[in-house]
Image (cartoon, rainbow, N blue to C red; front, side):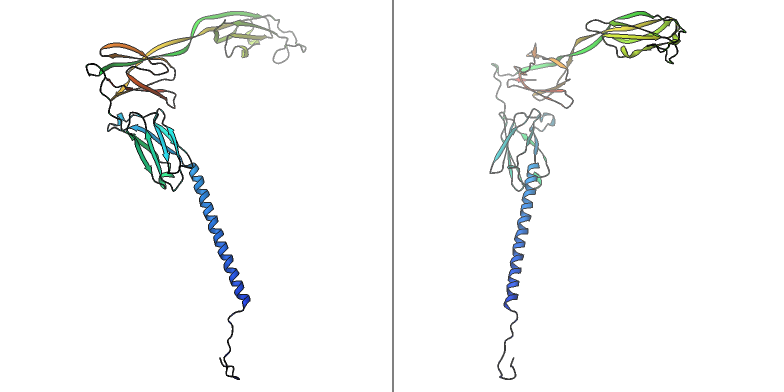
Length: 354
């Protein structure tokens, strides 16, 4: 604008140098704060993913592929490998086909995981698990492996041997107690009634009369014990007597009966049953369930001496199933249930059929 005197124009500055510097510093502070906040958020997300990765576990089962669900048998000893392109981890399935994988480096959210399943007698199987929800919900994975074709029978005639009339025999040992006799014995507590106690060691319950105590002990012998022990007063002033049951209430090999009498002499009777513990073996027989080329049966936890009786090409045979589970015509494995029962599964070898 003209200044009114010289006619020249004057320029009025918008701000001074100090205000500009303040604005510049304020902008830098906001930039630094935003960068710190972004770094903190990234660190938190990274730590959350790290924690989640440590908590991720892949649970699954390996079964035989078959349209008949009764023939979808668990496959044991399958080599299960998980990899994400950077590293890998492996495990093997157990007798029920179960497997579990837990490795933070492999199961990291955001990375795809490749699963491979390998076992002799089955076609290789590969699965890919995509990152995201599949690795965070602990999904159950079921891998169905296709069996390879079995080789032809190796018999001379080319016909497979026939296994028939299969049954399972085993023994169960139980401990039982047998009543082998009884014990009867009497004893007396000698005393005289109406004699003041005068603070003697043994007095009547009310402390007035002198009392006497007597006891007897019995031994049932090695391997025996007394049960159902009874003691009672049978003669004399029984209302003025008392019996201590602490020495025989629970039975046992040795028992003791004590009685106190604060009147005239009284007679007591002791009776007990004598039992002996013995082990008895019971032979039991069950029939397995057969689906396809596999038979299944379960046995109680007390089973012993398992054997399989069967006819091979019409000839009756007995096959003891020892700890190695060896059979000439089948491959067997076992697993234990939560109730301690043992589950057996035997699959026919090449050259045999049911």
